[in-house]
Image (cartoon, rainbow, N blue to C red):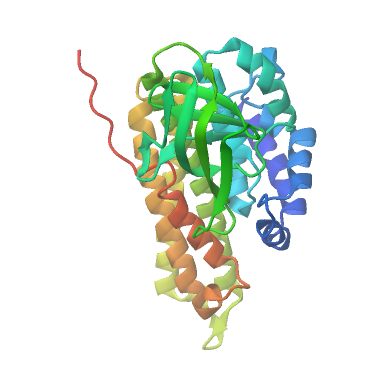
Length: 351
């Protein structure tokens, strides 16, 4: 898409979310088993086709790219709506495509593109994503994957192991799913335990580059979400300081707060640039993708954390009440900073 088309597309997503993912609706959905409103997900898939964006046409998708998909992730970050875009339509679909398993892609991705099938990527061990929590012995899986997105509503599990990627039906014998308490109530995470579960191997190539690429996609996606959420925090703060009156004038007119909001703006804009470059690098397979994603991961995590901290400070006491949304963004910021592991600079390529 051209820049003007991307803007129009973003406006369409924002308009739908503004109508159907208002704060009250998000709060109501976060208390459900799924953690999101299935009706909202259907609308996004049917009216805009968000789940089909980065899926090739041969597998029932639109055949766009990760640029468009992560634009949607960014818009969802503004609302904190927990629909399975990041976990299923981005991470799950990309895991299947990266595996190179044409049969599995043809069988699973058309339903994913329609929004009728949810994928959950089972990956992290108890100490994070550097060491998978599930082990493969031949075609049998055992172990526990931690911090799994969208596990509660998933129909298919994509399991990342040191030996490769595997496909397992979510209701297969020996699979146990448990939603775990998290800091961020707007995002459900689960533990998925496998006890000698038969599995279908996805692809036959070396899993190391596939897993590395999947981490890049994950980090780029989280960076896009962080930018959308930070932008919304800045807007909330500016709106509040225009209406909150102290000493007979809006507090936003005080120079000290103007300077702080200017710093927030600089953080958001720099994060936007880093996120956009990372998204385009990953989408095009640029040689600099690993470095660009590392920069975005570091910059966007810092920007969102710092911006939401200022949001809380400048809203005052109301920001730490349950009724205000500032604390939800604060919790998302700290959760996102750890999701898929903290930023580490990639090792330089050697000849």
